[in-house]
Length: 221
Image 1 (cartoon, rainbow, N blue to C red):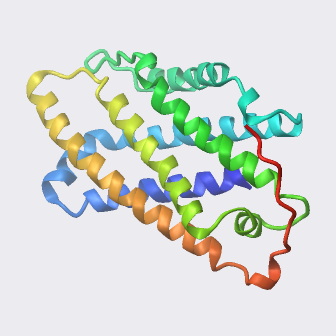
Image 2 (image 1 turned 180 degrees about the vertical axis):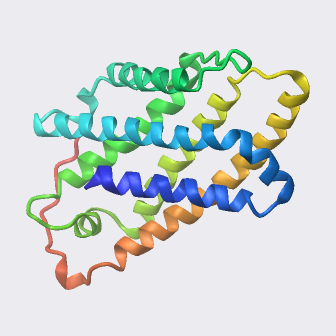
């Protein structure tokens, strides 16, 4: 369920970003060469999110604490997905020179956000309740919104860092840099809207009578 939710959220996020940029003719012209990269990058991120969610869920089922999760191992696993993505976009005219160590801090922060989400929700998922009910058991609407926004914001930052790795001739590179600024601004505005919308939808899905109280879960480090 979490993987499905993330996939839907990321695809909605991607569609809204493109639509926001498409309102301006100059940006629309600049968007075309980058559209394949942007779309493929979102699908690549969905795959990495699934890996992180399943990795955290497996750790929870093994009764590990969240602090026991090996972030370095998980990070190395995501690099394999990144490398496959970069190979699919390989072009001798537009080389990719990605130093993954430069992405490590941001990516690991995003991983920790997913680990928090998985452990918090699974700690309250004791029955066949739908995801929305479990979220309401676990978070306030504001806390859930903040967590979703954090996940999207960190994706935006990493995407910008990854985009900077594309080496382009100077005239084209200047266009890319100007476009990247507009793209990042659009992604940040969209992240705020998506997080607010998804949190609001979850907390309006079920009435309070549908939510069974649960005993507080012991804090895990």
